[in-house]
Image (cartoon, rainbow, N blue to C red; front, side, top):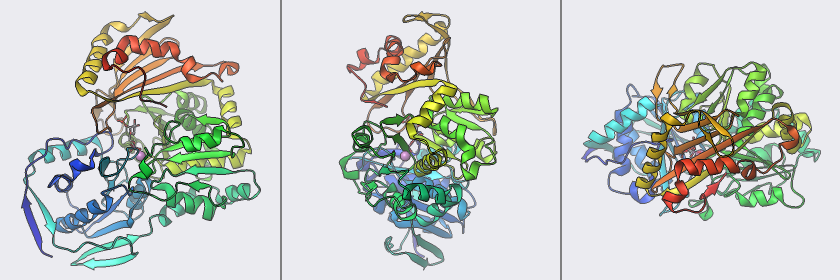
Length: 545
Ligand code: VG1
Ligand code: CO
């Protein structure tokens, strides 16, 4: 195999964020930009010669070109085998599963998740390690350091590979397998859930459903599993063909972006169950007839009912949530006497806890939940969990949620995002918040919210002892309410400021209030402390979820 070494100079903007490197496609198309980053990944790894690498992406614009480049660089680097999803397509949880199933050395996921796709939109790349999960911070730090000093990259002179034909190739000792993107993942799901029961409930008409794949990666997975295997009516899965630009939309499963689904579920004659997934298939939105389930509640409900699912029937070892996620799951953990961990935002922080067997279920407020079956959040897994639950409990989604609130009370929750704020303005807002932290404790804000603590979240990983600081500003009140401020680490334009708001309502008769109304006073306090509207010149958040 002929290998050419090309001289290069570093780009200074290749620091991975919450979930890999995300930039505009045009940035990735600069000469050597993708190559620098991929070579820096390989330069940060050791002892991978002859081993397996899994590669796949969410099908967005530039996916195929990037994969061809990665194949040539993988060959030059000396990997022994590449496993690639047909058409270059693999959902993020499917990559995680394939790495684990085939004992691969690692995987490369090409995705910018819920960000829009297309020539003028976003692309992304992420490295996952041998447990199937996103590389931990110490790896991404080393990778970033390598991007700053890189001076060459290596490319093997091989022709472009046909990504669409299933089969095996051998190119000068590098084995390349193009595999069915869905089959392994579908088999895993069948081993976790009671497919027979779900199938019977669908056949009997007890469960009707709609799934919005948002023109993104879960289309083929959901079509196969929900319609072909479980027998949902043809057309139950819609927007099912992955498109390079996701049909022009944001493939982000929330009430703002998955409005087609929301209209169906909140309108006349809704199905029993509705769900949507994001660009790369790791997020989920769960709805029932006339009800939206917040991701934080969904995690708590899953934890409370895990024993009804075959894979978790023997019990779960513990739970974890990202810091800004509501405390609903904590209440379940107390009742079930389970350990409960609070981690920084981003799935990479769950990996150690899952590997060590300290937790079985985990989730984030940002429409992500998962378990120890893979090391990524998993959208369709959550959908199947709910279908299994509905089939077992023979209750509607609304009844399941209301029963949960009856038992545990409700953590009323919402998130306000201010997107594409000027970076200097956003940094000044965060600095202003930071400067108030030392003196806030004990103060009473609004009409009687007394500050119990005000700090910046710092995580001490209980497994490897690593410390991650500056993970969000938290202000907790004596009545259990909380406001959290964070800067997003996944955006590609300016800065995105997130405000997370929650309050607790124990009285079940008051649990049905509108979240924006229940949280109005906290929203006002958040503005008083941060002056986001005033300083950014915005009248309202870009998105409320
Ligand atoms: C966001 C979410 C975070 C999630 C991350 C990746 O990060 O808030 O919870 O893990 O996206 O999800 P940030 O830094 O923008 O808040 V995905 O589906 O975009 O891979
Ligand atoms: Co995603």
